Image (cartoon, rainbow over all chains, first blue to last red; front, side, top):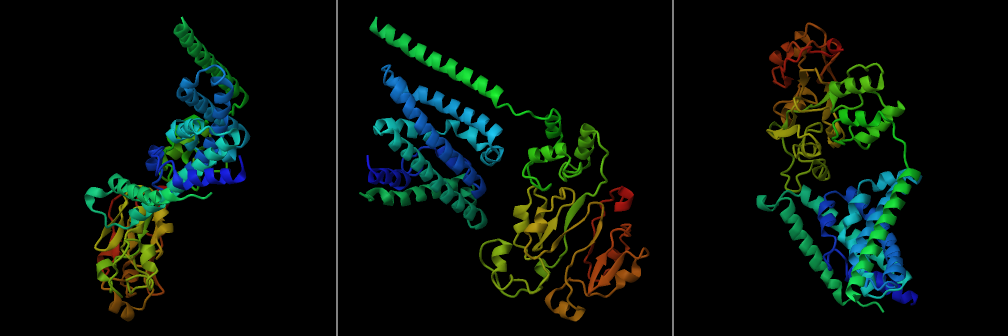
Length: 196
Length: 277
């Protein structure tokens, strides 16, 4: 493991294998909270926070519990449990210790318990056989990639909102889906990108 | 036997994990418990829950906390109006503060009557249009009629009529978000009970104004002479109503040669602010 491999993992997770636009994970919050840039920013921070933490914890659970007991096939269900508990715990802790941060993350923190991108990163860390550091970096970078996609898309949607020349039948969700497809296509352009 | 053992193993591990996590969460909820004021919930119930931010706080729950601290006044919520302020005063056991309910009014009736500088084709947004030589309307004071306020209003109380924004006083809650939104500053807060308003903001002299608008105030002072209550005066070539004195009789609206004094004539009783209190 070297610094270059970490950078390569980060860039890969942010651009080449962007969770939302290339791997199609976490589409629900991507469409749900992208109407306004404000909410998108809040959601982004919550996702970065939880995904980084979740990759660290699920790595430990997998390595020191599931592998030892030969229970690797239970990864999915155990990870869901671990992530849900983790988010609840963090929420309670923040409410008591850092009320300002709790206010800022608001409802987005409990919302992403079931974000499939969070579970996705935990499972993909195992599949890719990452070390602890690599897992955490991958979790963080994937979340940054998610945030990038979310922010880009929310600005596009705000723009769509003011320029009124959308045919009646395409207003709202249909035009959002069409434009997210175009955004995903543009991210396909990164697929040949190789840093090191 | 092996498979039975594997099943038992899985069930036990997951069961124990779940029980352990449950205990941890239960313990954490005790350790990290944040004590909430018992009055918090009832106040949340009487607030409308629109989270519009008109009170100056981020959300209804933020206002509720401020109310409990005593840093917000009981009539801070303009959306809930009298009903919710009464309920809040009751819950907190304090005296109800005076009703100062406001509504927004568009002080312009230009729209299609106003001369255009150019034909604007672009994003239907007043702020965007303002960037092109201060908008397509010649009148410096007039409504652009591109509906930024219509989009900004969280209650759908504003619509466009003949190219000019119009506030529906029945729906307007007085949150005044539109007042801040309008780049021309043509929307103003007026007392909720004020039925008679001047729908023009132009300080242009009569002659100059006739050239750029078919309807704006020319400062003829007929309204000033008509009013028996000394409640309307022409200041800087524009009729201005003194809401403290106005009784809402509507005489000036009848006499105005330009028909720009609007009597919404909703016949709310009482019709003026001082009687409302």
